[in-house]
Amino acid sequence: MKDVRAPILATILAGCLIAPALSQNAPAGTDAAYIDDRSDPAALIRSLYSAINRHEFARAWDYFGDTKPAADFESFAKGYEGTTSVDVETGGVSEEGAAGSIYYTIPVAIRAKQQDGGEQVFAGCYTLRQLSAQTQEPPFKPLHIEKGELEPSTSAFEQALPASCGDGPMPPQRDTVLEAARAVFAASHGERCDAAAAAEADDAAEPADYTIRYRTKADDAEKEARLFRFLCMRGAYNTTFAFFMTDDGGGVRPLQFATPELDIHYVNNDPEAGVEAVNVIGFNSVDELVDADYDEANHTIVSHAKWRGVGDASSTGTWLFRNGLFSLVQYDVDASYDGEVNPETVLDYNIAP
Image 1 (cartoon, rainbow, N blue to C red):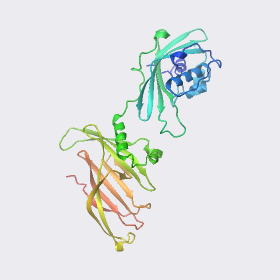
Image 2 (image 1 turned 90 degrees about the vertical axis):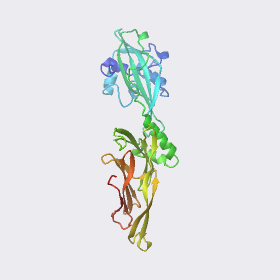
Image 3 (image 1 turned 30 degrees about the horizontal axis):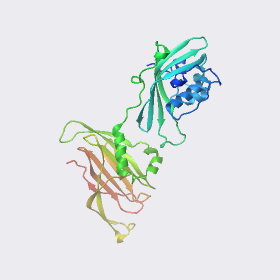
Image 4 (image 1 turned 135 degrees about the vertical axis):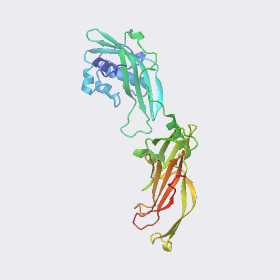
């Protein structure tokens, strides 16, 4: 379809949306009704039409989002020279949610009347977008026009309205797997994780999302899994994350990680006096890891936990993805509080069985 920002007249029409009740020959200038309302798609359409017919082009320009209908505002305003009024009919509004937004699609038919008495009819579809109000930070972004596509119509204005926007611009497809991961995270960790702190973090708007392709010993066919990392808690010097992965049935499950239970002996039972021995006396499983991320090159999740802020005492675990699972392959411990970084390896299973 023809992009509305190409010819000047189509640029004009990119801003002209209105509900059927307001399809009329409103005079250009301040005699036209002033409407400024973004409470719903129809209200925004009425407001935009109000701005166009009152020649309040700055207001009309502001109803668009980051993608504007012209290269700059001056070109946008100049495009209306010679236009006396614009009539617009709209069809039924459809909506779809996607990744923190609601997208609305609207069929439109437009008739632009010129000073020389000529008329032109265009038809197509527009997309409007409303970002989630709960997750936004200043400056707030209200409902706005995201994009539009129109093409000249040979039909009369009254018959030009498209039946639907099936072939026009549509919202992005919903990521149902990501939505399922969010739901499982909320159900399993919602009460434990600090949602407020997570929402304020720059890296928490979306979970880290990885695609892993692999084969197992039992089946030589290539498989695919998605791995998600969600921020849970942010502390003074450690941050915890929870991991989730898709299973063969298409569901999403939380991951558990094997961790060694340590028996540490200090000289005179004083952690700052020196370490006598670090023994592994068993294993536990945890569903959160500290300062952890997935290394796509090595197919490992590595977690590094500081035992105090200076980082001279810590533990580092490495879990390798093989045969569809993450297995603990190495664990390093720096148990001495001596101001130095000197870890020792207490587990090493890096040789695949």
